[in-house]
Image (cartoon, rainbow, N blue to C red; front, side, top):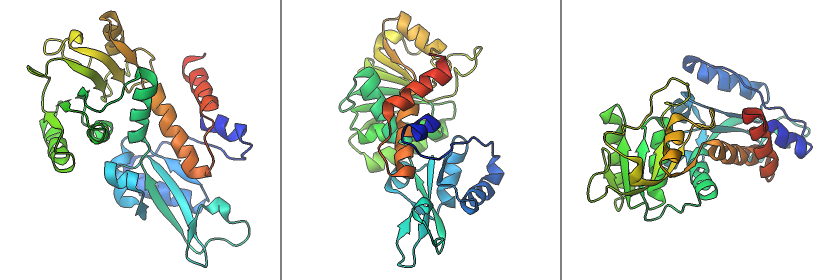
Amino acid sequence: MQNAAFAALGLDWRYLAFEVAPENLRAAIEGAKVMGFAGLNLTVPHKLLAVNLMDALDESARVWGAVNTIRFEGRTPQSDWRPPGHFEKDAPVEIRTVGFNTDADALVNALRADLQLELSGKKVLLLGAGGAGRTAALRLAAENVSALFLVNRTSSKILEIQQEIKQKFPAVYVGLDYPKPPHSEIDLLINATSLGLKSDDPSPLDEKLFSFRQTAAVYDMIYRPSATALLRAARSAGCTTANGLGMLLYQGARAFEIWTGKTAPLEVMRRALEHNIYGL
């Protein structure tokens, strides 16, 4: 996706993948800074860990409490900050890390594009309260959903999210279980767990406590495989469905713009994703 976008805009850049253990995250970021990287993407389990490792946080990272995109910036002699690639002659006086979150807005953009769903006033069931689930819960609340139901194996995590939403978005009703009367019927179910990545994974949904008949749409953040057991069951029940490819696309496009300062070639990136992941 990113390399296709760089090529489309004629940028001599490369996007590379590195496996980094959590205990080595600080060293990896420092190493990338020294080697002149323009920036980094972070995936689990680094998104929460990185918040306290940044020199500065963009508002998106402060609001949603997680960092999935880092931009390296250099300070000029005049004390303003620019991406290192903007220094043609003299090296920057110092380099800092700035953390961003592109996941939260990507989820909303994907729901609008793939499910034609505007969230204001809607009722949502969210499965999972890890890093992705927490960010999703807060972003959904910011969109003024009327009710948000949180389900997670560890109750302490959803209690924390409930309290945070009550403080920041007091108008949103937050339930700590599957919806029950008078909220039995909802507009959207979202899977933010990792269940579905493996072919033998059980469904993240307990169908004894919640039926697909109770929701109009189902969104699974997992994009590989293209149809998880959850999505297959939802389609069979007549629900509108979408997987996480759109979320992956929109978060990547925003990261591209943060690093390069250029408009992301969205369709080029979409085609690259579909070809790489699904062989289309």
